[in-house]
Image (cartoon, one colour):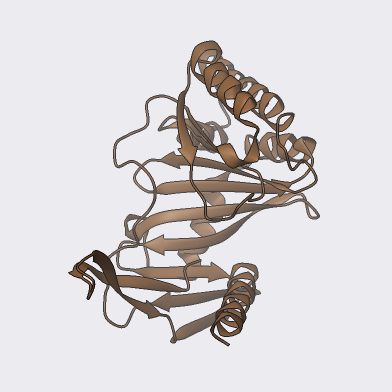
Length: 270
């Protein structure tokens, strides 16, 4: 869940003749809390800019599964080996993650072909599945399992939890996240996801905000796997009008991260 928004950015000439980037950013101060039928959502929005949030995903439909990893999580020869494996053996597209930490916690992002989760939703809604759909879903699961098992064994920081991110772009972005040191937790989560009607969770959210938000307003939905309760939870939603709506769990986590950020900035300036 974003804590703010970059409103504007300009390239300016500095006093030494070099050029730099000047940005205008806003930290969200106004947060609205909605609580009913045992559910709480927090709504944030810029006071100055109602454009949708910029999402780090291609605007085109994804027609081939793409795997993204950070080379700082591997020794160089293993990183190259994995990239070749993805492309040559698994026929996948690849991307390199670039993050700010020196050695960040392991992360794997898998962009799925447009329509994958829609296929699962249709299956759950109709309680029918064709042989081809069953075969396609089985192949996707088996491929993901191969990707994960071949990747995690090369992490240089195996003692850290891995963030697994699954992304699909349809009319809006769907993002599913699992955080665990154990690949088996991921496979548990995926098995459950393939049996879960995600549309029911989306419908429950839309019913909560009925007459204010409909499905066409959504630009992104993120789900997080709760390994203790063994269920997928809707974590936060962004809209095309610049709203960011987070669950209570998401909001509390965001505020904790923000307070740590402010403390670090204060310590750095002292």
